[in-house]
Structures are given as C-alpha cells and as structure tokens.
Amino acid sequence: MDRNVVERYRLGLFGRMVMGVAHEVDNHLSVVLGFSELIQLAAAKEQKVHDGAGKILSAGEKIGAIVQQFSHYVRPHAPSPEPFDPGRLIPEILQFSRYDLGRGNVTVLPPLEVPPGILHADRRDFGLALLALLFNAAEAMSEKGGGTVDAGVH
Image 1 (cartoon, rainbow, N blue to C red):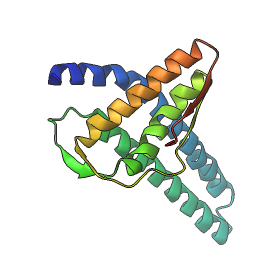
Image 2 (cartoon, rainbow, N blue to C red):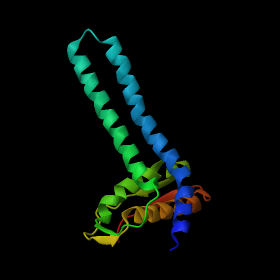
Image 3 (cartoon, rainbow, N blue to C red):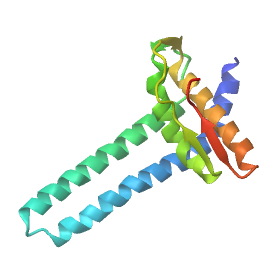
C-alpha cells in the first residue's frame, strides 16, 4: 500500500480519534477537579488529604496513559514490522472507538478471548485497520439506528 495513502487516511481518522480521546480525558479530568476541591475543603484532615492526593495521582496517571496511547497511533512513521500479540491491541482500539461508536448508538461486544498468536506486521497500521473497520461498521449501522458489533471469535 502506498505510504502517502496510509498517511492521508491516518489524518482522516485523526479527527474522530480526537473526539474519543477528549471524551476519555474529560472523564478522568472530572475526577482530578473533584478531588482537588475536596483537598481544598478538607486540608485540615490529614487522612482525607492523603487519600485525595492519591486519587488525584491515579487519575493523572490514567490521563497520561490515554494521551500516550493516542500519540503512539497518530505520529507519522515509517512501517516497522515487528512481532506482536493482536489480543493485547484490541482493548486499546476499543477504547479509542468507544466514543465514536456510542454516538451512532453502536455497541461492541469485545471478544471474550482471542486465540493466542503472534503477528509480524506494523502494529500501528494494524491497529488503524481495525479502527477503520469499527468506524465503517458504526457508520453503516448508525444509518439504521445503531446495533451491535460482535467482535468475538466464532
């Protein structure tokens, strides 16, 4: 496949992914803000301050992980085939697609288990291909009012 076509397609997916990431970031940011207020109110109570600070740290780590995963996919890159387990990639792709699919009233039933195996391919391009399949399914299903994508292995 022509690399320029892949890069243009990546940019097309970028906007949709931004919405999904922004939604995920917003969910965790509300925790950060809520517990920041709690710390301000309960500054005199040491245990609550400690617990609240721990929750702020945890939410901050989640925000960092989401942004890190996101940036991994959107950076232009030369193809770099490597061995990887596709079963570990699926939860990341489902996380990125959840917001967009939900907007179209489409739900995804994740696989209960993925048969073990290793692929030798570019992990990011493979992930984008899966993401494109999910978005195409969501677009087709949302025109009919939504539905369910069963990602299980049958």
